[in-house]
Amino acid sequence: MTIELTGRPNWRPWAVLALLTDALIAAGARAWTHTVWSSAGLVTAVLTFSMLERRSPAPVINQVLLRSARVRAGLLAAAIANFTLAGALFVLPLLLQRERHLSALDAGLAFLPLTVPFAANPPLTGKIVARTGPRRPILAGLALLTAGSTVLARTVLAEGAYHWLALGLLLTGFGISSVLPALVAAIISAAPSGTTGAAGGLLNAVRQVGATLGAALMGAAAAADTGWLLLLSAGVCALAWLAFALTHPSAPPQ
Image (tube, rainbow, N blue to C red; front, side):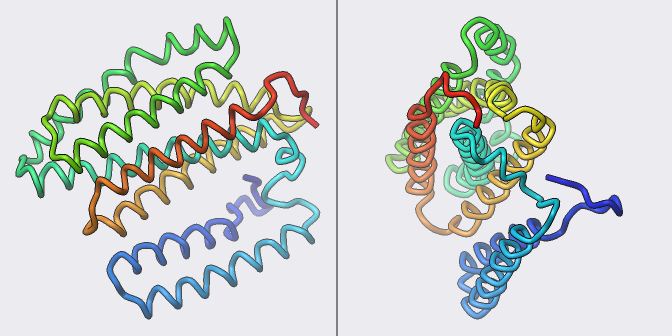
């Protein structure tokens, strides 16, 4: 993301994200009039943002970056990884407390399998990236996220035992801690010359957008069957894996 000369962050992309989030939350609350107005504002904001981006001599999003297929695939993977993590962190504690009647403390302790990989895995991922490059850890991480979300969905739908929930959380933790560190290296190395700073900023912004939408969408549908929502996470992780797998690992930035 670029910063305006006044030192204030550009408000246009955040207006789009705020209106989209508001529309999702309103839809989840079945406030249909609110949803319609927010959706109309969202369409207006998107059109305005697109028009101003085309006309601006210093657009918010550096279009040179998006010409690289590897950068586009990496940004998609980053958004979906944070979408999956934020969605799981939002919906699973509600599930454990509401449907399994765990206390807040017990629900927090139940999440320990998710946290262990974040302490143990990043140093290993760093060594793998240094030795073989970021591609393999990214694909492995997205595959683990797909498997973890599938196991979590199966556990919720079938009211499975805790060991299945622990397995899903462990797979998700290893997936996130594999894919995110490797994505930094992948996107920075794939960015065209002179755009590495913009690439790092765009990566962080896209990750936060994914997390926001994950929490908003899961929150909007919290009253629905949470198992199917976790299958949605598994599906988008599989799509991210496919998108990254189809990018040529040695293709030079354009």
